Length: 520
Image (tube, rainbow, N blue to C red; front, side, top):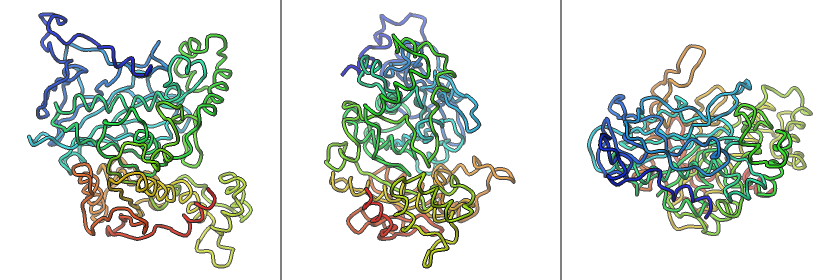
């Protein structure tokens, strides 16, 4: 396939005749041999020089692909240059270009790097957990302190990898002229993730990891991308397990829809004639500010993986239910109050609540109103209109899609499928979108409150230990650990519940999810 071409071109020779006599690490860019993590690790990106943090070797900002600039903007990721000198991996690489919540431009296009945390103690090849961050495929970065992998690595004796990938227009813009160059048009960010997974397959043994035992997992848009990877034919063999937190497997834009956005983008950017050349000549900030992406859990963004017929042949849920995906042990789940922090502060009247539902659900708003009635309606279980709105949008976008995803995987494979439901109300708004990540990574100090970094209590730490044990056990052997036993998914809709006391349930919001199924 045309998009694979950059990976078929060697970045530099690996035989001694191609390396200067003075080069101290003549084979640093050859596929490395297995070995324990150490201060200096040979990789195909060069000799990586890390540092110790706690009981863990930490390697930050390792280039897994060439900077996607110049002719490589709007192109598949290419092999990184071979370095004969040590690559200092003691600071995060730049985040990929994006706008923050205030509209301030941040980032640099030379952002395709990953980070590795590897426990220092010598042991057998460890399982590897590769995390894909969220942010609506428009924002976010692996350098977010929330995703620092040291505590998770030490808690489960695993290797943790995080990565940056192209976002927004730079990662997911499709256009007919770009599609004429490469069938990867519209899926550059997804190909970045695949390139990072290939790098892991080639190099992670040198850090003490097991390339045959890789878990790919993500949250929010990272979860959606993980589902896309499971469904992508060319991602087969890059991972042995998959896990998605608060994501979806449906409703990716078709190539026609994505190219309509691409046409609007080119017009707004003033690009006519040779559109690819014009797009590559734009300044990075000017490009990111042209038809900027939406980064909200209450609205779907225009820049997402595209159903292009090649990288994504069809909707992931369709391929999964038909068994046309990478068959691996799988976990899916969501939080109880996903939209709690994003919903409006209040709705003054029932009419205002109805208008908010209409903005979210269009012609189905009246039916949603009846299913999630405000407190003025007799029999309503909701204390406020806001609570009803949070429940409706959480169920529609996260909780009920998790059930559909679990059903699709169960129908399409014999490998085990598991479902979870995180209900621990760890924020003033409940179990909101992404809150489980602080418990998983153990980085409570990354949550800043009015009184400074959050200080976990004993219950917080117990919930954290439970989710870390389940995720790392799943990474190690394909089955979560913990008490009570976590049953495989079946028609009874069993799920692990993460609350003040970890437990289990059969049926998660069944009546409401049956309602959403009836609409879809």
